[in-house]
Image (tube, rainbow over all chains, first blue to last red; front, side, top):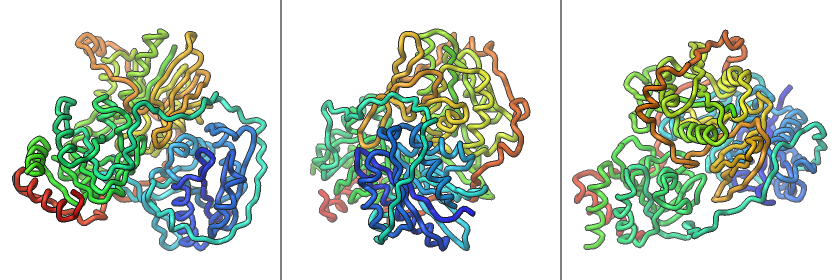
Length: 324
Length: 260
């Protein structure tokens, strides 16, 4: 019978990702709640060389899968390897981090096993052997309690920051190289080197103060207002995704899952509703100020100071006051 | 080139959401609806591919009967015809069942390229496209921010967005599925001629039984229990008053905090 928890530990550019430690912490907590143990699996180049770091955590076993077909990430290769790991371990639950790589291959695993992958989970609740998952819907405006209805394995991917990386308990686990026959797997991608779009790249992670602008600004002609506020605060200007999509600000000014992650002392969100994709890039900022016309905007859940109002009135008043 | 683009209808971004009385879903009665944001970009990418290679663009939508408005908009922008999966058994599907239903409708069309948006703005599973690729045994690329095709249209080269500002180009042969990230292009508006022409374009309405889908295949693998508003983790101080009053209060607090 299916038993235990299997945690997928991701390697990116040869290194373990930070969010993988959050997954380990979540896997440990889930296993403890269910009175069972957690294992971890590493796939691809660097699986063997990184295994020892994972084996220094409180896990029952660390499994590595390496193969010529897994040397570079492809969804074809990684889905096949992950299915093999799940068949080998027969876990009751599989825990992933909700990374771009997981979002690319884990649904294939779900389809092959005909099971649900409950994505972007922010909390796990275990009561009497029943697991309830909390996920955000409507771009973070509403939470939903979700349960998996069918047989094991239940699969979840955790939103970045749902668990603390330092919550992963230390321990000592044996490691095992799992040999997987990928002979029949067709790798249908031709992969080029990954790269950063460098032109004029701005490193916002070093900024002490950031003024960030969202859809509420309505038109690029109004950006002057935001620039003026940033100047008055001696802050960098940043934006949520839609502003960069529209070409109003360059992509390297974008904060969020697809842009930069920042932790300034002061983050002023102007006309930003606070969709999950934006929030993951700024939620650990020191003091957060939100100015938005919609009093139910999720950005207010994170803010230290909130102003419900018309930014075209509030921001000029703020600039005037700062200049006094 | 035969191109299918999946479009979901979702509540308008700025609409105020209210949870319904039994907390099972939102109260939809006062909402207006629009095409999911990344799906609108996917449609534009499909139309551009047709302009380059010829062929046809088919909109595939799973949703209630009033999703016909969003389908009509897709046809007005230039899609040639549509498949509307419309049946009470399609209500409240999870990602796996949604993908099974769409795959059952799209598979027999044998398209060269299937586009979906990256994720929906309502349920936000972000899985339907990748699930469909697996079910239809197609290669896929997700979170795509640029797309090139070979002259013969048989190879796609796409730029994938990775995290933290990283990107990667990958190539794959068609038929293939691509999930589109918002911002890949600038979606067009429907022309008046397009809007008039859309009325004559065929919309093929399909039910679960038309597609040979039984209740077991569509049984959700995950179930939404109850909905509730997020609990505030922070003690937010809401500043009230006219613009000048809140500006003064805010500056005083930021100075008091030592952040400015």
